[in-house]
Amino acid sequence: MDIDELYQEIILDHYKHPRNRGTLENADVKITGKNPFCGDEIILSLKLKDNIVTDVAFEGSGCAISQASASVMTEQIKGKTLSEARELFQEFSKMVKGEINYDPEKMDELAAFKGVCEYPTRVKCALLSWNALKNALEQKKE
Amino acid sequence: MSITEAQIKPEINIKDVRKYFPIFEMPENRDLIYFDNAATSQRPLQVIKTWDKFNREYNANTHRGAYRIAEKATQEYEKARDKVAGFIGAGLSNEIVFVRGATEAINFVAYGWALKHVQAGDEILLSELEHHSNLVPWQMVAQKTGAKLKFIEFDESGQLKMEQYFQLLSAKTRLVAITQMSNVLGSITDVKSIINSALQVNARVLVDGAQTAPHMPVNVSNMDADFYVFSGHKMLGPMGTGVLYAKRERFEEMDPVFFGGSMISDVDYNSSTWNDIPWKFEAGTQNIPGVIGLGAAVDFLQQIGPDSVRAHDQALTDYALEQMQLIGQLKIFGPLTNRGPVISFSLADIHPHDLATFLDSHNIAIRAGHHCAKLIMKRLHVPATARTSFYLYNNKQEIDQFVITLDKAKDYFSKWI
Ligand SMILES: Cc1ncc(COP(=O)(O)O)c(C=O)c1O
Image 1: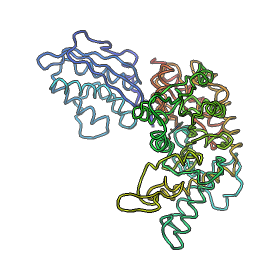
Image 2: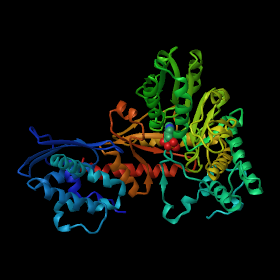
Image 3: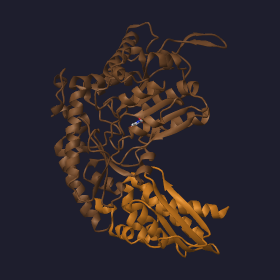
Image 4: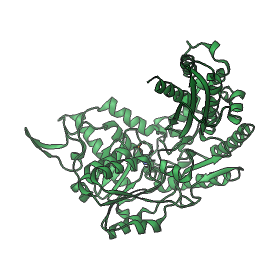
């Protein structure tokens, strides 16, 4: 098992220098994601306009995987439509769960998390922010 | 070296105990350093074989069949009860009820005893050191009865504040439910003195022995506990086995929790009467090979001697604490003395999960998380800790390897944190 496959440079860089960290004033949706097993927590705030994610930020604490995943996610979904964001969630979760039928073309920097599928206990960490996003988008639909 | 039956001797020396554990013989596990013993222990060949023998040679239901193998199954099952009673110093074998584990044992006391004997306005004393298993059932009891939960805190070293306990104890205290050893900090509580004081106010005491029964000599009669609970799987026994010890008087005050076959003495259309203690608490077909396997685990520990196990664990723990403290930015949560072989710690700013994954990639199994003890996490103001825990098959070389790998982890993550 090569640990560097998991802790790719991109991941550790995002962990050390998280992008879009903080909270948005006048957020349209604010949602907390928690991992009850390890106590990791992400608070996601989103601004939406015309079905587009115009701004996004996250706060919270946790392991390198969960924090870097949140940071990369914010970069990847900014400017995307809600349905594009949902689709990205689908593809990303397929990848980290080790399913083969995801679309690598869509992954961009998210591809750094591919190694997570070798560590089943860490899949939840990679998906923490994404599950929060999914819940936020569902909330918006209602 | 593989294990043959000839090697299973009646007296077992703790120094070469590892060879009895087949899991370490697997080629892919040869370098495995298993340091998650507080979660579950490995099982020796003697236990595996006992389980296997039941299934191959005398599988039958207990207490029912009038034929040879059913009688053998019943005898072996009841023999296990005698062994367990002897192991924890219970006066009578019928003070032992077999359950699935410590959690079920505590729930048994909550449903069968507490719902009947705890009333609105009563108080149940717990500690902040409790595993969720010895907390959540009492929240249920408090909600149903209107009783109040009160918590004994732990001090900076991780030991219970006994002075605070003495203050909290009052005529209102109906029950004190306390762990004898924390599964996170390793702190050992003087349950004898807890019980002595509880007696003054006529409160009952439940001792959670999940971490002590495997690791040190236990004598429930000397301790004078009303209830003592533990799990088989943390003390070399099969999963899905556990023990509820209660004093005869407590069992007499207690209602069955599960109803059905085996637990009855007579049945009519609208009502039934119960079997004798302990069988009235063992409804339905039990985990018979599991219990017989637990008996084999008790034999194994008895052949080594609980005192030797304790001495071995303690020597390893002292050594580990000494070596770990030499690592810069390593913080130990919990006491340095009067403790068991469970060490919670943090290293630099590395998240416990990242640390556990790093150690895993070096074949070292530790635990990261809240360890089912969120009250401890709250008090320590951390979301999670890393935890290492030892048992009789661990050795100093493994600790050396562990400490070297902690140093490596610090280097690895230091570039980034
Ligand atoms: C102190 C303590 N109490 C209770 C339990 C619960 O044991 P089980 O899960 O076997 O029921 C544990 C196990 O983690 C424990 O360490």
